[in-house]
Image (cartoon, rainbow, N blue to C red; front, side, top):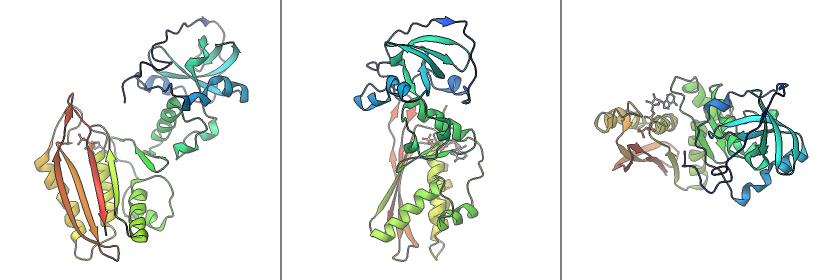
Length: 299
Ligand SMILES: Nc1ncnc2c1ncn2[C@@H]1O[C@H](COP(=O)(O)OP(=O)(O)OP(=O)(O)O)[C@@H](O)[C@H]1O
């Protein structure tokens, strides 16, 4: 997460809260997001976000809204009334607050809960994105698209999303859910169709799951075969490299202490014909690593 933007309308403003005894009538969306959201959320004062202003949203339809609590968490609530810049909002947890409208962001209708592409959200603001990712994650849907980008959330447990059946289904395109297999498949198809080299960039903070994601993508590419068993040699190089270059850190028991650039070469027929793995030193910032593993699929 990026540090809080001090110029954000939500960052430095002191919010006065007036709680009343008004009972809350309940609502559909879970309020579990409130406690689990990070306390330091980046906010946007950019004009791009001005169309998400609560006035516009509240006037169009009586949407639920996100209210950023003074501790930085987002809480879902329903606007009861607006007067000038002030709004009365009823939070799911039961509190009714008198808040500045600029501290509110519109929430999406329930029908958009859990959409598999964030681009489908009517309101693409931060709490809505986080809510959608959390909603999917709670159902073991760890992959979500953000247009052409795949967002992967580390499940820290086995999820039944991998293996030959899934690989076959993604190859036949009988599954459309976002997945690393789908990304690898697109790269292969576009490489063959356009005869242009493809790259898959995997980035994230330490422990985010980059190395595992890279292995999953390689598993898919290896399933395309190479004829000489080269694809299995590529996969088997992982534990050897990890034995030399990984170490336990406070964030990850199996943390890569080097960056990796893996080139996979393909024949004209789309079979793996070779590979080259380059390692590079990673830069550490405050004991964190943010490395990028890049795949180059070359024909
Ligand atoms: N898709 C996944 N399914 C199950 N567990 C996962 C998955 N991705 C990551 N993990 C778990 O998270 C741990 C950390 O993942 P990984 O080593 O890939 O992180 P990383 O981003 O490469 O970290 P570093 O930058 O420190 O090397 C793995 O050892 C594994 O236990």
